[in-house]
Length: 346
Image 1 (cartoon, rainbow, N blue to C red):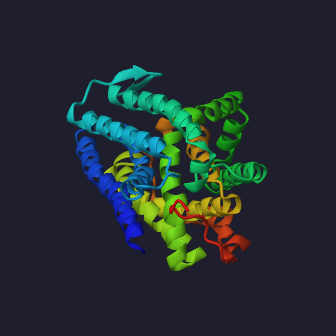
Image 2 (image 1 turned 90 degrees about the vertical axis):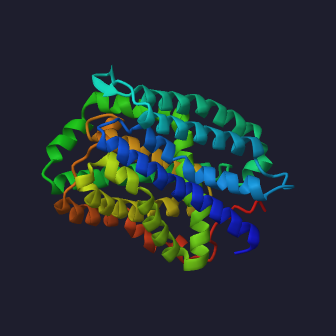
């Protein structure tokens, strides 16, 4: 690595992992006190891209192609969401009932902050201009192929869910949910919601796929780099595995399940990004993955919280995820020489 690239990488690691794990200690504290820690996951999703943006701003002086105001706003928004997360455990409030569920006012605050931030996000992204968006991987490419990749993802996701339900004897429940009109109404609603929560999903994918993936592929090869990315992506989830998705008692099972998901899904996300050179494709696929999982489980986003994960469920999870997503590691694109864009601004 050249000097500038090393500095950017260090800044990226400090934000993406350093902040995540420090905040994980606060999540542990809040979880042990029975507090609502749901503000933390949304903020955590922002840290990887914030690390990329801060690294470029601190080392890219004189580069007129840097989308400066877009990057600056993203860092400020990330900081604001992190502050709200900290306040949610340092100054806990009484839960308020929303839609029949007890929700912290801080959790509501971070969601409203994300929605308002999304409006400014889109404005500054468009204002950055084509040249700056293209220089730093923010532009959209190959939209016809991109849409096909997203449709492929939806089909694979539904197929994986159907097979998982069949193996666990819950096919009847899956069929019932899939044939319920409200399910498809919710599907339509989440597509509109994408534009109001996009910074969170951009925060992950811009950090993982756009920045870290090419670096790891350059060092470990097209396939090896993607597998290693899946492992480190999974490790990044440790705080939410132990203190949000499940209870600490099932945290280890959740962490293993997360590795299965991140490695296999990471392979497919790498595939669609390399095929399209369009970062918005994995951003949208990531959004669909999280929201479709919540809807098909019969609930909203809260359905992802406090899950029950057993050791016995991990083997079927491994098999179906490899079958539907991991298998793409053998795709032609992973045998080609090109490793994609880097965050050099050139």
